[in-house]
Picture 1 (cartoon, chains in turn green, brown):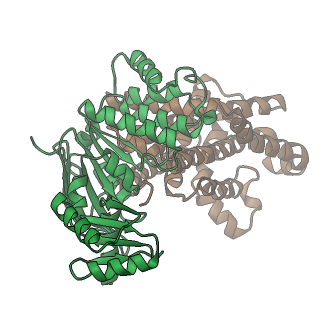
Picture 2 (spheres, helix red, strand yellow):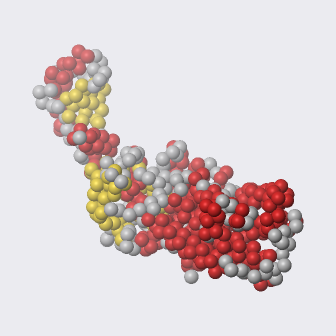
Length: 311
Length: 257
C-alpha cells in the first residue's frame, strides 16, 4: 500500500531563522505516527505545512496521495487539524459549532450526525449552551468532535494533550486509539516521550529542524546501549570491592550515592548468570539489583544531547 | 454553487455573533447619534447660517450616516482579528472552503448590520426634524449607494483586520476614516476651510459620496458628483477585495512553532 503521508526534503525559514532543515518521513495508512520534539523543534511548522496552512520553502509533501501545494483543496478534503488550542467558536453553542463545520463540509443528515457526536463526546447535556461557558476539557472534546465530522481519512493532532489533566489525557489517548483502529491515519506531534511511546506505531525524533532518528519505539530503544544491570550495596566498602572485581571485564558506572553501580553486563540469561556467579565467588552480595530497560527518554537525550555538544 | 452556500453559512455565523452582542450595535450608533445631537443643537445655530436654504439637520444627516458605517466596520475588523487570534480562521483554512467565502461571509454580515445601524440613526434624525422630499426612486438609489459604500468599506476593514497584530489594533484605521469625514463638506461647507484643508476636502473620496447622498435626499437628484462617487466606491471595493484575498492567501495566519 502507498504511504498516506510522504515528506521529502522539507525546508522552511522564518526570516533568517531556519526552522526546518530538510525533513523526510513517511506515514503508512491506518497507523499512528508521532513527531516527537521539544519546543521550537519545528513540529507545528511541519504540521502546518501538511495541513496546507503554510508553504514550505523547499521539498515536497503529499497527504492522501495529493500534493499539499498544488492540490491543496484535495488535501483539505482528506484531513482535519486539531490544534494546540481548541479552535472553537465561543459565541456559538456546541451544536452550532458542529453544524457550522458540517455545513461547510456539505454533510448529509447533519442533525443526526451532530447528535451522535455530541453523545459520543459526552456533550449532549451541554449541547445548546454557549461554548464560552465550557471547561477546558469540554472545549477540547468539542474540538475533536468538530474534526471528526465527515470522517476525514487523515487527522492531525498538534500536541493533543498539552495542558490536559491526567484523566482528560487518558480520554484523549483512548479517542486517538479508537480512531486508528477504525482505519484513520493519525499524525500527532508531542513533546512527551511517554505519549509517543504509548500511542505511536512509528516515531520520528525532530530536533532543531532535523529528524535525528525514526522507527518503532523498540527500534529506537536499541539505539542506546541495552543490557544494563543496576546493583545496590549495603555500604561503600562492598561497592568498592565490586568495582575492583568487575571493572576488569565490564564497563561500570558508579551512582552519585556511592551505593549503586551500573554494569553493562548484557541482557541474555547466560551473561546475567556470569555476572552473578562472579559476585558469588567473590562473596559480594548486593542488597538489590534491577535490569535497566532503555526508554525513549534515553534515546532522546542521547541523540539530542550529542547534537548539542557538536556545536 | 458551493461558494455561495458557504458564504451564506459563514455570514449566518457572523450574524449570530452580531445579534448575540447587541451592545456592539449600541456602541456603533452611540457616537453618530451624539455627534448628530451635538452638531444640530450646539453648533447648528451658528453653522446653519452657512448652509443656505438647506436646514442644518438635513445638511449633516448624510455625513452622520456615513460616520455610522465607519464606526460599524471597525467591529468587522475587530471580529475578524479575534477569529484569527483564536485559531478559528486556521481551522477554516484547513477545510475545503474558498477564501472568498470565509471573508465574504464577514463582508455580508457587516453590510447587513451596518444598514440596520444606519436605519436606527436615520430614525433618530427623523425624530429631531430631518425631512426629505426624495421620492421612492431617490430613496432606493440612496440605499443602494449606501449598501455599496458599506460593502466597499467593509472590505477595507477586512484588509486591516487581516493585517493587524491584535484585535485592539484592528479597528485603528477607522479613526483615519473619521478624519476624512470631518475634513469634508459633511458638517460644514468647504469654503470656510483654510486653502490646504479645502484642497484635501474637495479631492478626497468621501466628499463626492456624501454630496451625492445629500443631493439625492435634499434635491431629489443624484447631482454632479454621482459618477465620481460611484467610481471611488467601486475602486475601493475592487482594490480592497483583491488585496484582502491576496493577503489572506499569502499571510501565514497560523500559530507559530
